[in-house]
Amino acid sequence: MFRFIKTTIAGGLLFILPLVLLFILIEKAIHLLRGPLHKVLPIFSGFSIAVPHQ
Image 1 (cartoon, one colour):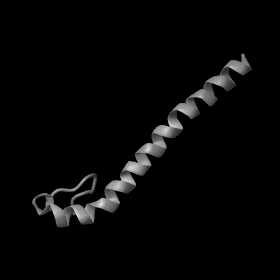
Image 2: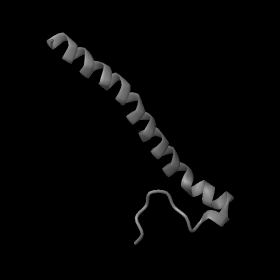
Image 3: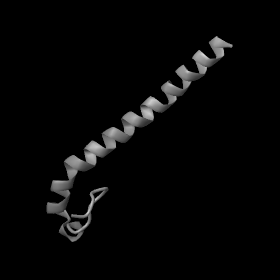
């Protein structure tokens, strides 16, 4: 029974970890590209992604 639990936890981590890393990389890419995109496409300058209104 312990082997089943250990295998399930390891499999879950191996499944979730790439998804979390992908999410973090996409978030960083959006943050880095936000400035250049506003210069190229000024029509979207009033919009932001996941930034709270101040």
